Image (cartoon, rainbow, N blue to C red; front, top):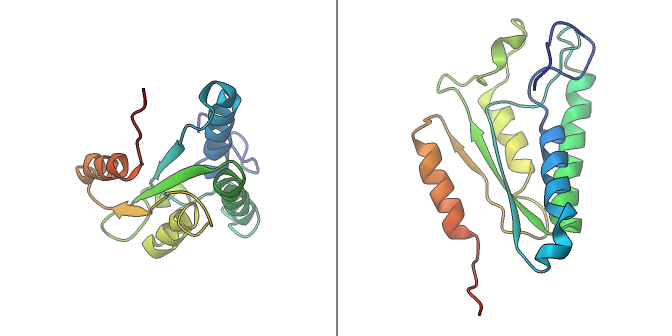
Length: 157
């Protein structure tokens, strides 16, 4: 996010906010839908962390609200707008999120990050979404290729 995280320590502008990204992607995909009636729409969400904001490093309030909002946007995208989501969790091989040093006394476990990311696409009723995770940046291109092969394509004349 393009906001100075320390300028507003109780604000939402710092760090990973999947809800904002999902909202922007959904808006972009649905805005031109009349031009693409029937087109399969897909969001690939790659993240190195769980949702958080700086609230004096108190993860009970803001953290939970952003997490819930991201899940709600993902559920809306998949179930109501029929947009498939492919979440990709990119995490540190030592088991901590790549953004875990933002609050020195708070670490984000890999399992928590992976569970959250998986919830953003894999458990809804519709869509082609599939969850991926990796510790190796070189594997990201392979994951994108797998996703590209997963999305159904129809050539029409």
